Length: 395
Ligand SMILES: [Ca+2]
Image (cartoon, rainbow, N blue to C red; front, side):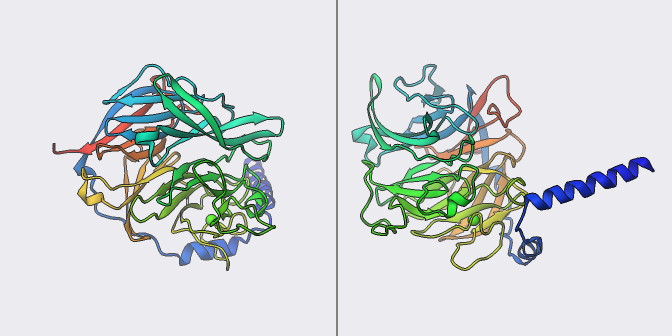
């Protein structure tokens, strides 16, 4: 009897604590939105079309995998190392000259993007967390890759102050087909920043390749908006892919995690100039005029991270599809796209290789995936994180 009373007491207290945490949040509208929305239908499985090779192990908290050429890939490791995989082999030594980073919380050396003319100018852009007297922030620096390592650093984006919390840094950087550099910045665990247009946290930024602000950015000329802003109202977009033919920009974004609103509500968003993606005013499938709803929403959370469009020849059935990996969800999701509309989905690698951090199409047309079991949120893995390769089953 006493146990029942005590259990009831705990449930009531937890519910009160939870509802006050999720203050101003309309549960009823959330439930209604969940019930009324269309799901993206599941597709017939294509898992018999590929096999998975473990190309490399021993990675520590990798964040990004980015192809440099047909037989060469870059991998960033959050403690501050830039690694190279050449002809299917992880080189033992990191690239010299990587910047000093603050490897704290969700920060560290995060993404890498290569200049559209990297093949001739060897310019590589690194995004990473720095500790300054104004706290932790995300900086983007351009380097020239030489035989001696990374040289001639030029700060493209110095970073802006945010919260003292070491979380929600974003961060993906990608060049668009307009040759502009797009940067995702998370709201640093303080939702209001995402709606403050004078604060660059919780935004997608758009910059020229030298860091200057493009004159055709959506808010240029307005005194009440920072001119770097391309899109806003983002919680924490840890994935961004730009279609190399159409220029379509898709992002994955982490939904709330109970401390800021009911959990779940992970998003895939179609990013357009000047749009507001709603956080923290709306989340999950709630609708609000003036905000762009997600293309697809996932509750419970999958914790989506890196993503890519697939345009290779190795898997003809996947051409044009959008792939994103998931941490908590431990899977690779394939969204079949009809233009900008997802028309079907398939979940691959589910629970097979642990938490997955990033996915890219290699120069050889295969899909590459990195795992994320050695970061602070993962279970750890004695042999380190892995680089996986998906290649056709029949070859
Ligand atoms: Ca949103």
